[in-house]
Structures are given as C-alpha cells and as structure tokens.
Image 1 (cartoon, helix red, strand yellow):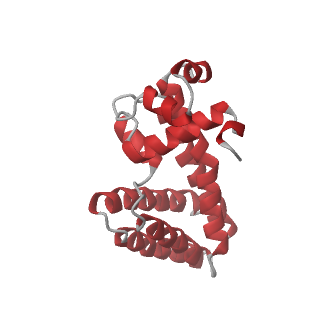
Image 2 (cartoon, one colour):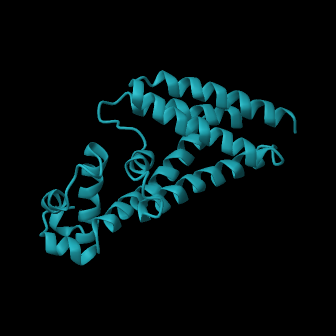
Amino acid sequence: MKQSEIPTRERIVSAAAKLFYSEGIRAVSVDAVAEKAGVTKRTLYYHFESKDDLVAAYLAARDQPNLALYRRWFAEMEGNAADKVRGLFLNLAQSARKPSWKGCGFLRTAAELANMPGHPAMKTGAAHKKRVEDWLKTEFAAAGAADAAPLLARQVILLLDGSFAVALLHRDPAYMEAAGDAAYELVRVAVARK
C-alpha cells in the first residue's frame, strides 16, 4: 500500500510511533511527526487536539498488537503453563538483542510522564498493563491454578516489567531470561499445588 493510500490519522500515528519509540516523546516535536507523516502541522492538529492526545494514540495503537504477540508466543511454546510463561521471556530476550530495541514503550512513556499521573497516555499505559495481567490470570486459572491466579499474574507482571527495565539499563537480555526462569518456577509451583 502506498503512503498516500494509508488514512491520514493512521499515517500520523505510525510516524509518531516510530519517532516516539526511537527518540522518546519529549525529544520529538509535533513538527517532526508531521514531517515524517507527510502532513502539515495543521492537518495533524485536525486529527489530534494536542500532542498529549497523539502520545495516548501512539500507546493505544500498541496495545492490542503487543497483547496479541504475547498470546501468540504463549500459544506457540510447547509444554505446560510454566514453560509457556518462560517462552514469553525468551522471546522478549530475543527481541532485546536487536539493535533497534528500546525497551517497553509503555514503561518508557510512563517514566517520561511520571510527574503527570492524569496524562491520557498514563491511563492508556496502565490499562494495557492491566489487560496483560488479566490475560495471564485467565491463562493461569485455565492451567489449574485458579486460586493463585491473581497473585501469580501480578508476580509475573512484576518480573516482566522489571526485566524490561533492567535489560534496557544494562543492555543485557540475560536479565529477561533470568526473570523467565523465576516466572517458570512461580507458575510451576502454583500449578503443582492445584
């Protein structure tokens, strides 16, 4: 599909996603997004009331694709729920080995907006993280750990987000693999107690 055939709003969000992920939201101006999208600043503001709305749209556009990717990795991994959880971390570690990897866009945005808890992007990021936690809770309940599922999902989310942060800080995906080993043990023990 040619750039001109992509709807304008979608082109703007795509351009913003590339720039925000690679450079950070504060470092990227609305002018830079408009230029990369091939639109005028006026056109950008026709589709988005403010840069804040554009940042929230950038994260909203990542929500379902990220969750779908996690679900696919989980489903494709052989073995039980513990093996599948470890597989999430192994796939993330593989992604973190790519030079273009910059960590979790949701967490990086939250760090940039830490002093603005009411920002629409903070709400979008929190909702995404909650959806991932709820999905894990459902998977753990289906694996036979229904009573432990809420706490277990929260523990795995902590390992997941912690591994994003530490792997980015040290530029070492082995931290994700170690977190995956810890998640494996938590899930293995919880499912064995059923």
